[in-house]
Length: 399
Image 1: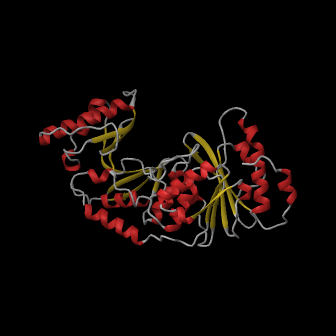
Image 2 (image 1 turned 90 degrees about the vertical axis):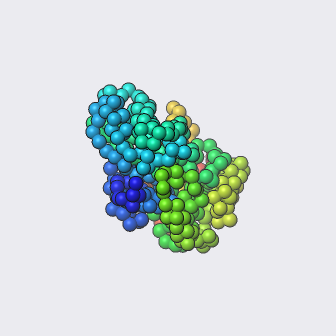
Image 3 (image 1 turned 30 degrees about the vertical axis):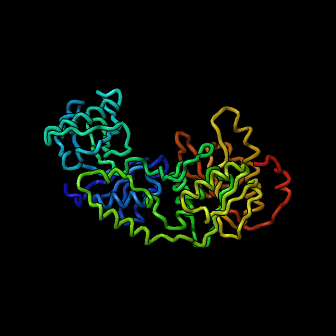
């Protein structure tokens, strides 16, 4: 196949992140179109798909379209997939993995459509080359294919990512309910951090440190895929390895190892701070982040401008909101008394708890943390009278 041919590239993301992903693609020189709450498309060749895998912070996968057709049954799907020149795209010595979604009246389970797709690819290989490649149940070490079939329309993509892009490789030791790396990056990009080169980042209640680490990578202008080399596109037939190496070298040239940006993270739990430090060390940014073991209200703050971003607890169990209400009230009091002249933001999975902060947000952005519908609440804390009674009123709980 001529990998320089331009085709449709679909980038996928978590629910609520399409706007941030669209902004990233626009910054990379594209005219992106949001086609669903979880996908944005552009036009490009395989080299561009490589570049997107390297640079996108908020995408889960980069899908390179190779075919689209109308089919009305599993047998028609098999025949259409079998007619594609898989021997031009895949290698007989590399296993292939197929994943996908099928929404058709003839299909009760997407896995059956995926199985028919696998059979068709293998049958084509046998007919064209006499060799039958192995199929894999996981994307690890495999060339990856994605199937999307809805009603009469089916699209076939080469999944150039394989293992999702959210797997940055630095978080070997997650803490309680960690944010996915791509969601953390989307939050930061939606907040426009840093608004100026001097704007600091402070992450109280940091947990595993994902927000602070992603902030450090943004400050460094570090491509999030710079140290990863196991992309599925590396296992396609006759891919230009030199083009990939050139893209990585270009990214290294744009990287700033030691930006002069104040980044801090705190947590009251020493084990959380130990976890965050380990993760930051693997990400290569431990020296850039000031870690503090303390209650969030004791976090050392720089002078404005700064962004204070918190992801406090929220739960789905009945009655848990009542237990957490004092925490959210105290967060609002701390914002008003300690964070004047700064921007603050809270990611919460509970709208009632968000109201307990007691401030009027300048922005409410729906985001999903897994299956939990959340709100990113942004506040501008203006200079004004500091009232110590606010802190005394909400002196408990310590968190």
